[in-house]
Image (cartoon, rainbow, N blue to C red; front, side, top):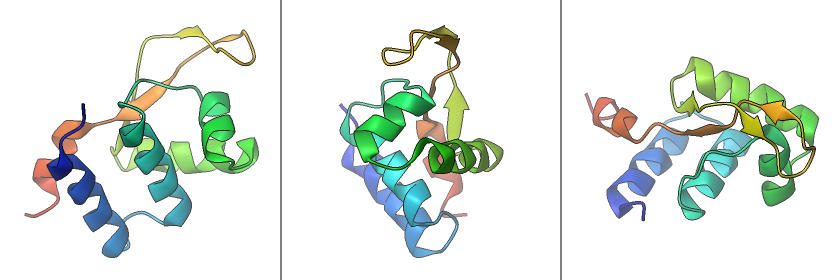
Length: 97
C-alpha cells in the first residue's frame, strides 16, 4: 500500500507546476492502484487518456525522474513485450529541498 506521504508529495509536484494535469493523473493512477508497473497501453486504458498523450507524458515523467522503468514483460492489452513504468517513491525526499 502506498503511504499518504507519497501521495501528498506528488500532489505537491502538481501544485508547484513541476508536473502538469495529465502527468499528475498518470502518477495518481499508478499510486491508487498500488504502484504496480504498468505499460503505456495499460495506463491509457486505466486513465482514459489517449495512448499518444500517455506516451509523451510518460517520457517527460521519466526525464523528470518521477517514473522509472521496470523489467520488460508482456502487455496485458497488446500482448507485446514492452517496458512498464512505476512511480519512484524515493523521489519524494527531493521535493521539499
